[in-house]
Image (cartoon, rainbow, N blue to C red; front, side, top):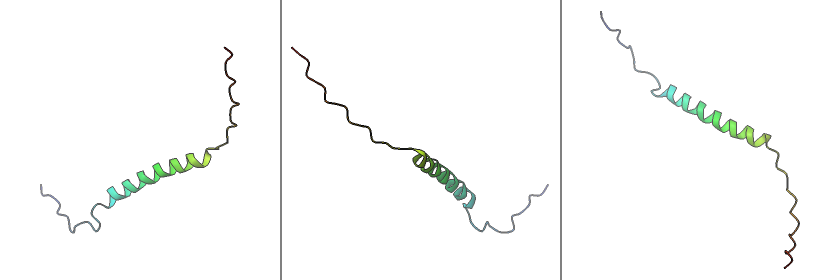
Length: 55
């Protein structure tokens, strides 16, 4: 049984690993971006000063 010979080298070596890396990076960045957009920050009113305990 003869092996098929590759006719030419790939045009862009490492193309699919780079696509997978960029997809992973974009999904993680998109997750945190969406999390930051959905988070509603509000100011918390300061607590009243505690009175000193009587002796």
